[in-house]
Image (cartoon, rainbow over all chains, first blue to last red; front, side, top):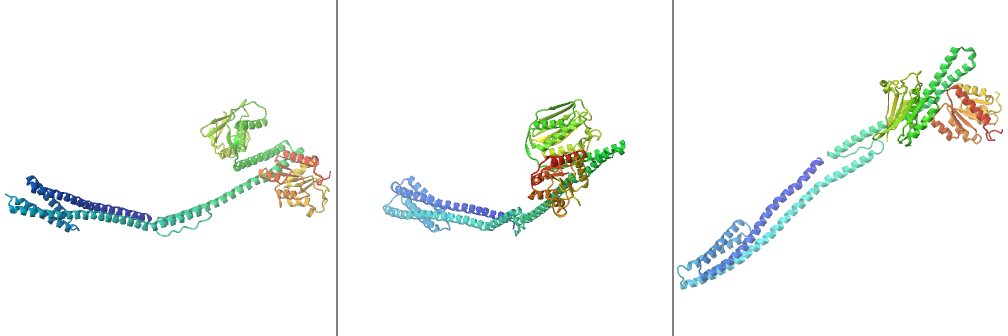
Length: 477
Length: 151
């Protein structure tokens, strides 16, 4: 049986008990009230008996109609009450007592009637004696009546106490029984819950360790066994995913290692043949110049230029690969100082030409100094390169603070580019200008993009042919 | 095989083209007369420790070792490690002359106590000038402790 069902059934038990308790209590209190009523009736009858005694006495003395009527009224009242009591307690222990009471009251009634009759129409001497006898009999009956009523009162009082005790006992037993029953029924359920939770807890703890954890075993057919099955399936899935992840990681690490070895080899081995080409061509041109004509010398010069270009390409590829592998060490960077430093270094390599350079005060930011220096070097270097034909060349560096990042821009009035190809700006080895126009390998902006992405920023470029270019990058604050 | 009695420069280079270019550059400045060229790390150590083929060599050490990093048999890092581990050669000037521009090579060799690290330029004019400058400096300008060479 499912635990939910069990709990529901156990929950119904106290409900049933509450209903039974209510009914018992209601019925019990009704009976109790009746018994209390009987006591009150006995008290009233005692009172009336005393009144009757007094009234009859006064009647005998005065023969006033007023007392006669009052006596009859009292007797009627007593008879009615006895009748009612007899009706109500027909089968109880009091029935016999009530019966005696009824008889006595009837006797009293007769005596009063006889006493009444003796005075009609005149009281004779014999009647006086009879009256005295009757009065005595009346006294005797009344004296019988009083203890009976006292007994009735006492009896009903005891009955009230006894019944009330019984009632409370019954209700107490009812509550205790229900509580015990619920407890007994709950114990296996609670035990089940506790042990299942413990097993589940161990299972969850075992998840943290390596490998596939042993499957959880919870027998039975309730929520916990179902949970354990699902948990086992989940941990199997998790273990499989973890295994796959580890294999993937290992593959990735191998790939990275291969890549590192590759770039190391490129760095080392690809340069040697280039050096040989350039070196031997140079020796040829130097030592065999007399036997070569002008065209021959030019062709060797082409070979030499290309060897050097190839070296630049290798250097740039390696720089890009290093950019990808660089682990950022963020520090607070004074951007204005960095830009001016990079700019002055670049300017030293430039031939003298009119250049108007403006750099507004730039906000400082957290970033990797080496990476950001390279970014500014490439962007400012490009600006210088592409403004080669301008008089004067204008290069501006600006910055603006947005809500959660800062945007830095380099704006020039150089050759610009066709914005239709702006998606190719940051691609590796992609160039928007011919080799004969501007030299370069098409790696600079790819490196910029890689560094800015590593800082979780974005880089954009805009421009138009002949109208300069604007390159901006954002860095999060 | 007749050998120079005293060697000033030990060139450890497996690439014959690079070696030829280096020797040519040194020759121009008359620095290649006392030069020994070996093609791998084992030969370099044999030369320095008078073993094997070089058992008969004089005990005088060169003024400088120009050491490539990528070498057959034993690579440059291992050669440098052994040079520094040996009491006789611990103070011997060693210059790494390599194509590599990798930071890790730079760090490793400096930690091992290299005297200089030079990346070979591809352009021949630069390469020739660099090698010539190296030869000039280490053979003619630099002075070494007396246990290596009594000047």
